[in-house]
Length: 305
Image 1 (cartoon, rainbow, N blue to C red):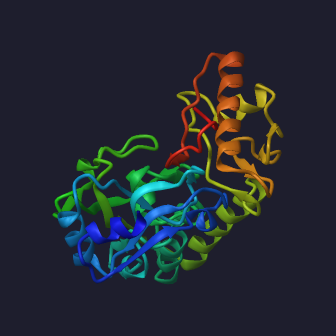
Image 2 (cartoon, rainbow, N blue to C red):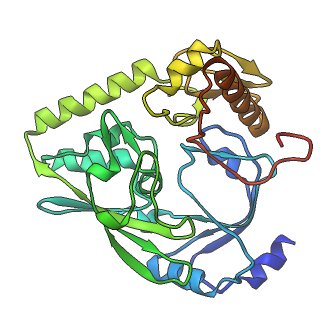
């Protein structure tokens, strides 16, 4: 079946890999395989693939897996992984161009080396620029909407679109660009500042993150979005969920808006635990928590409806 899918796909310069074990690359270290992954050789290769692929083949874009939970049944169709061809960082006078595959922390460090401020918050975001654009990622009172000048995305017909910030429809942890468009890069606003001052702000972000988040465990990003006027972690704590366990999954004792793979969790354990937390918060406060972590792929029959 896997070979048959590849034979239906357009001939590309990049790499197709069947039955790719996504779980080992996700931060949670769980999840089933991708039916086929595609790593484009360059932008034109990506555009050609999107324009020529069969319309019935689903396409999913995965970054470094910091804010995604791949379900145990894996992902059907093609999973696009933007590799080194999309991790470029270009320094300008008042902006930095970053490929969608560039790590957020690498972009912030590049800005620091050039004495350019405004992107310190990116050092606290464990993902790549493409994912940060898709969810308007933010930390420490800054979001992507505060720094994006323009973004570049390829639509399902393979057309490269340059989108000004006003066209991105940013709101809290949301971007209005259609899900089937693939971000390939962005230009981010910066301004000159003293390198020691920038370094101090980045160090503060790093210390705060280490002190407050379980980053040395098998975890993801924040599990749930903050409801209007409230903090998700406070609602979870008040509902008695700090340290709650289900199978091999646990609500972090350090920061209870993080789920942890204690070493033998399945994706179903983590998702079921998240749903249990949502149920208890709803019962305790009447507030419906909304998932922030992307849950992608198919369930194994009998686990998580």
